[in-house]
Length: 397
Figure 1 (cartoon, rainbow, N blue to C red):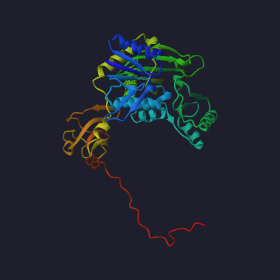
Figure 2: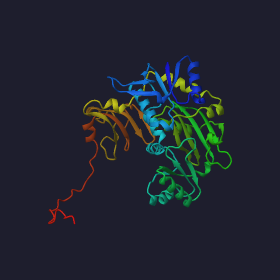
Figure 3: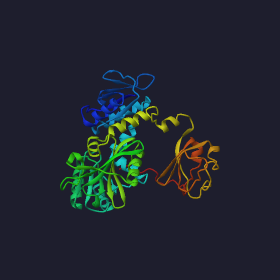
Figure 4: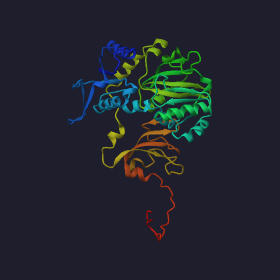
């Protein structure tokens, strides 16, 4: 396998470990500065240049995109995707994870446990927002902070209001989150590779510090995750579109609460704590998947006129409830069910014998007109057309 690691820090521990792991397994590997790429759209096919020269062929890339170059970095990753080069983390996945609000919006759609979160911009909405998450103390987070930077604990409402007002005055966007008291100064980092957690550690804050990040002096210890925590970590990474991710979770009274999904997790802390070859597990995963580059399904399936991908909800009262997919008539309408979502469960490529239930969500490919016809029309009161007023145009004084 010929692998490119996209990184601006070739001497960083994580970059060096990934490079070493690839070389030890007999792969060709280069560390390429992300900012030295040029996206070339002048020819008949998408291409890239590196340091002013055409880029040689690569089987896979491993993006290590820093927060300061998210836009350009994801553009480069997206270009590799268009060139059918495998990447464990897609451009969309990286962009989703980098924006804390977007990540929370996506995860909440899939019933992932998270600390209560709100996002507001108007000063008048701040106090109600704090109350909605349970009142003070609250955690205030900048949307694109990293390594614990931009995370503030406000002990009371007045201080929280002053902090948020100050940040808003400097054009900063912030999240307001509930403070999970039972997990104070402690969290879990799970390193997800593919469909499993390959290593996990518990991080503890130092002294009175509530942030447990290693960069802030926190200590680490290996931890064996329960199936509940492992499933939460894997599902969160997969929902975000990441096959390599660090998932940070709080240990809540009712189970795991996902705080963040990191698309470029550091390896030094978790390898030191667990003494596991996490870098090797990442390289092995890439080598096993390199022949199957992930593609943008909607992009590929919507190039045919009249066909597309859409999600259909089986509403209560629908005539297909209680029928199998095979007997539902979907195939006769030129519709193929790609995935069935039932609550928090996902059934990929469901069989024809699967019985449909109310509130099932079907990701389908097929004729758009047929899918539109299956969406029940909302009842609307038809507005009565009134007579033209005697003074139809007001004279401007």
